[in-house]
Length: 370
Image (cartoon, rainbow, N blue to C red; front, side):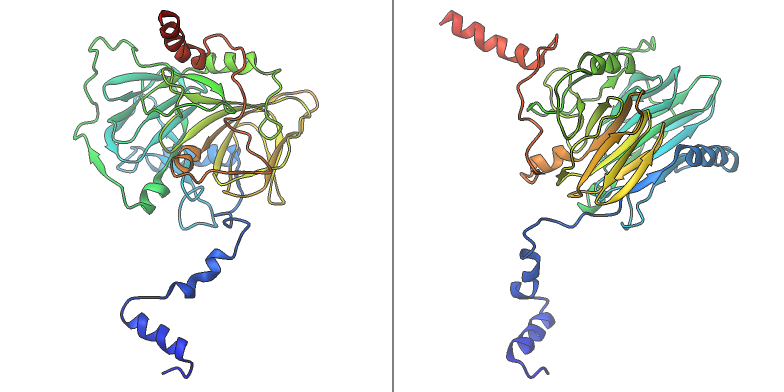
């Protein structure tokens, strides 16, 4: 028995499966916020592409776990960040990745696609051409079909670590490789999405959506010369086409455009991010760690880590696709930035089809009637 009365009392509490809050008071002395979870990491495309080819050789059939290579952060028990898992998946010509569903939210960003590569979500087929984004919200039936004559590869991002930490993982197999289509003709009738400036404030929503690259790139170029964020550059968020809400309840997807030679300002967020390079060459500095990236490389940014991007080319643009856990933190009232707030603070720019203007029209008409 300890001689100190308080130590002896702590030991007595421990035997009763109780602890005094004073024993954890150090948790509340760190006024600078949380320590970043995990490490800044880079996964080079050349290595990952080679490993995907090898996976196709050693796994002629995709088997129960699919032919998916997930990016593991060495500073975490599992996951790419503490809330997200990112990786790349390959299916061969003629293959079907069988139908299932889970409480985990997921999205697919196509790297090597085709017009006859598609994902079916709750009976709706979504084509997957190069750089298309397709959502599979939690608990939606989904399967993938490669009816092209070449291997197909896409980027997977899922909120697996988050669902695991919350102990909310549900999984169900459909029992067959393919689910029936809602439209038996096979017509591609799935909902199309849109993008909005990331610095706008918007409501939330959850829907399954396909975002074709040709539309996304056109919107990105429309705002390429905008005076946008000094921390993110021209950053457009993939949003619900009806409400303007985030991509998924736990995940927000962005496109970022950096002009030649552009260097953004350092900042940090309580959210974490995973990034995929669509085109260009650049460098991201994360808490002093320099990550040099090129086309189709992937990297991660831990939460509350100071970071900034730069385009190291003097003549070529750089375009990044990124996924953030911002919606989750905003829902909990835990999202913040330093040195200042940069998201949801600006007025919508004059872009055709402005969702905010459309949502204000009914109210304006009502006022006229009064």
